[in-house]
Image (cartoon, rainbow, N blue to C red; front, top):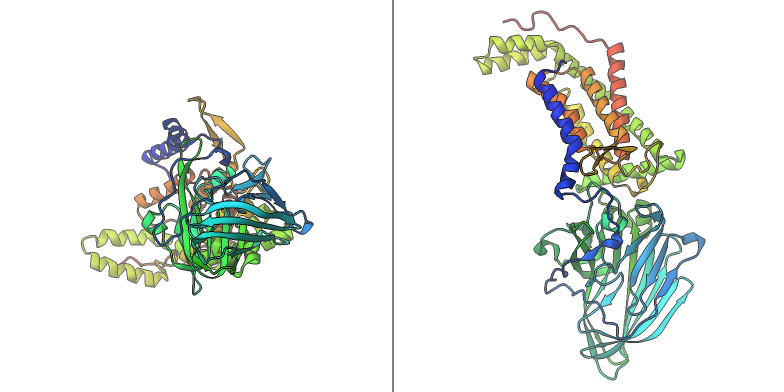
Length: 563
């Protein structure tokens, strides 16, 4: 297909937009600097959104005197995955290190700071109305178990709040037992008791990574095995809801905190808007379980048990924690697509276990998918070739019956029938592949397994494969050079030229522009995705060439356009 003057000018404009759009946005202050800010530079700028009446308030306990910080770290070889810093004041988890993950610099372990935002309690913090902390009676670490007893004063009197927290031998799970013991001589009621997951900010704030799209939301399982979620940026009326739930979770793109009670409690949420060093605001969210009022007779004790997960959205670790763990992944917002994406992630992990390289596993997975769809794609290509072959006769019919649309339609259907052409034959096979394509896209974009994993020149399969930056000589700005996405675009153009195209010239011009438009919008696509797309384009080109060699197109029947 030849490109006319207008098309060439349009392509040139698109290329200029691609190179200058991001620098222009940074110059105008619409985008942050090229180096993302670390979570340590984040500060709170607003108070937590007010909780509704039926949601437990997230009131942090007041510490009356300095407490010693106890560091709990499971040093067993079977679990060298996390290090927890516990507050001896209230026994909550103030922060944790994911020892197998690094921040965006690649130097330091990834640290989740649950006390990042003032006003949101730490992970596994227990709160209630009008509580005041008293003396710590017990504070000790035995093996991988933390024990804390402290006196708490409420409006009705004093009671002892005891907790026992035990880290799993492996994984990111924690068992937590909370006991309220009335040691006074009268009956008391501990009001609006709640337990929390701790604050979970966006992934960029937590790790310093640059991401195209975060998945930041509260997920919960309503009593009766029906899961649902609410996005972190929803308006108050939709965010602060309180159904009865068996478990709840707060998560971002790669990290989540899950709290499981095993019995129904009301959902309780907190939210505070924070900003990073560039002034960009985003919500830090926390969820929890509103236990409600706990009545205690004199000398009575009540114990509640919880399971807590704080760690990566690793599907194997989540399922080891609980059977429903996959529901927290959220690779896709649509249920059936999410199941398909999780299956593809499971398969990719199996391939990696055999091959030992996620980059090579993506290539093999792409080849397997293309092989499965080879017969369907072959039919689509053959149908498009047939449609292209009858285009001259269709043009004759359009000229002959241009004033009679109904007769034109009838004549075209006759031509299709005579030539054995299905006008939808090229579209239907493609439609069958779309769910798999989107599931692969969601899986490769959301898999933490690809984060900071190098392959060939790609330093990180979860980031663009930038190998150098091109100076623009405007305010010190530069443009990244990402070879994979450029190769992907070139291969798309080659594939278009090899694929028979039917339709009017305006449609052909639009199709010719598509690779350039996709290059602009997908230029910073993670390299794991562009690797898949590039290999898929190579397979498409190879399949078209094979069909052209071994399945030459049939000549259209004579006289098809007559009458």
